[in-house]
Image 1 (cartoon, rainbow, N blue to C red):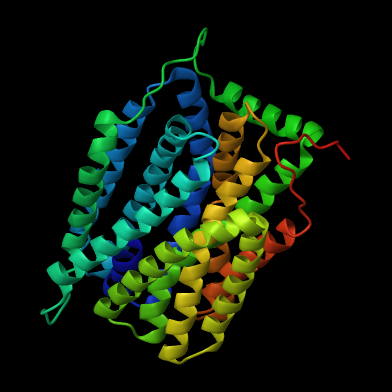
Image 2 (tube, rainbow, N blue to C red):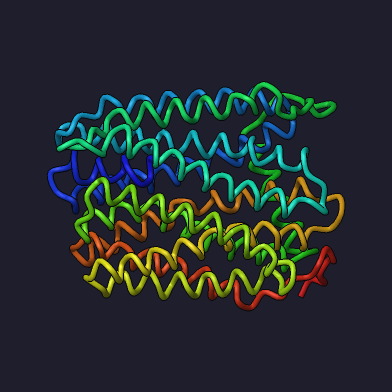
Length: 392
């Protein structure tokens, strides 16, 4: 909901002009990505060693709720621009920290035979929740008003997050501390991460290849949704109401496609889903840059929405297939770490493209570049199913 509503409010309602607002927002998200890359891997190591995953999730969720709620005080005036983009960046950082602990719970509630199904269901229900939240936002703050009242959306997001996270925080799986753990060392934690990567290079190079390539294209996937509403409003003249309709359609299509293409994943393999989805994304995003027609933009947006979810789900499925028994925790931890290590890449490319092109819509070419790099890096990969590769 913040993606499709509040980010547009920042660029169109707070900033002096759309280019300035978009550049400030993407710049803040770039720095948020840097912070995420530095902090989140440490949080994963900390949780593995000291346990109490549910408590850590509760603390980070509280931080997210407070960061969201603070945006209520972002007035529609250019003097509030820096406050708004900084607090949205803080919300992004805390959200990613919370996801470290949340994703770790998946291995406690699923078995190898149900991991893909539960992961895909999680993505699909997440999109459904986003759809419902956008409908509530539409009727509560937009329809029937001459001017949309966006500031309360921040409070709605905060309340929505807190309420629906509460059951997990109360009854979700917890973890006990590891045995014989000493005092936490930041340098030691980074040393352990590097040691894991070196071990993969020596023993399972295809898996390391997957971590690197998927980290790149997953960052592009996140940027597609993060900046979709901004481009719709700034470059195609969408009103707040129309942006919300776009968000509803995008979440609906993404949820349906993620569930239905799970069978294609099982039948043809996740590699087919990932490559075809990335190709469609590159074509559709490029078409968005080239077109000025609203109808063409809607068609491209539907294609993009139908592609993002299946690629996200198939990426997790592919890692599950490549992971040897007994290495699930380590590999999914590295999967999260690698994704966050480049989480600044797409926002940075988006900002640079705007600076070069001089228009907001040029930013999407930066995302296209990231997706293409990720696709090209992924293409040579020939995955094995839980078998150690010979180091080449």
